Length: 102
Ligand SMILES: [Zn+2]
Image (cartoon, rainbow, N blue to C red; front, side, top):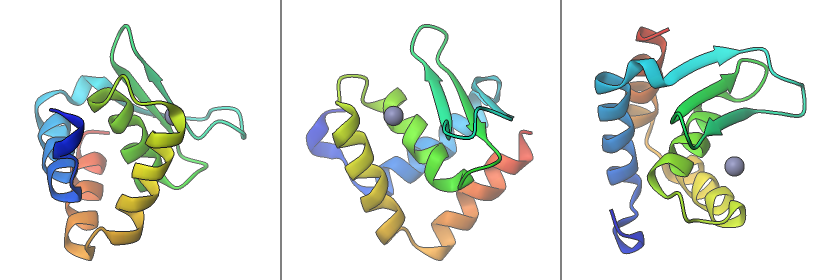
């Protein structure tokens, strides 16, 4: 996906697909309190800390997966944009899909 194709809808759909097709990529764990989540670029593994906002951290880490060349500042801006504008319906859809694979 090119950078120009970034929309909330596309990120929500791709995240939902990833949760369905690659559940082994995702885990929840107790990380250092200052670490909300991790994305391992080699293994493509995503770890979300349950001590932070699970939905925004999940989007943050999948954005690293979808856009490996984006700098952290751009990932953070995209995460904020998604969290500012995502619909209740989409938020519930992603949360349910995430919870179902744990
Ligand atoms: Zn990051």
